[in-house]
Image (cartoon, rainbow, N blue to C red; front, side):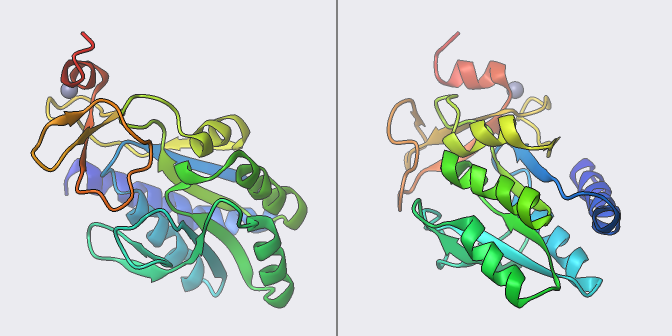
Length: 219
Ligand SMILES: [Zn+2]
């Protein structure tokens, strides 16, 4: 079993405990953050499965900006997938969850993929799901973009989440990767551009700070 598998197993166990604890305790807002390709969607889908296995329903959200896959689906790189509600910037996550909760008492957890794309208002809506509906919200996203700048959603999650949990992955040098370098279709590092690239052929590589700075000629 490799390091990542051990970490994912540990997280899965954590999530199993999580669901039973939540019924006793007050709900919380969780932010699972990492660099690219660390397995965030895998952990999200595993957590959702853990709830469902215990007869509890979950509500999954995914941003409409993720154009890699059909809208309204969460895919993980290891082949797992699930249907999800797709949202844009003007979508009210609290209103949607409130109406779902009213119609379904078994709804026990809300999960958000690519949470870096949330707006500040939507992060506040998630805090309302936790504080007013007493439903735990698990969000998964990147901390920073390809320029090393914060995403709006992640910035407010880092401020407002009750618990911050890092999902770790490594740089090619073996050190923990905390940054995300963007490469164009010819393999050249991209240094400027839009934070959200829709339909592009770019790829991302998780890197440690030192190698990210080297790639961007910052040091
Ligand atoms: Zn490195």
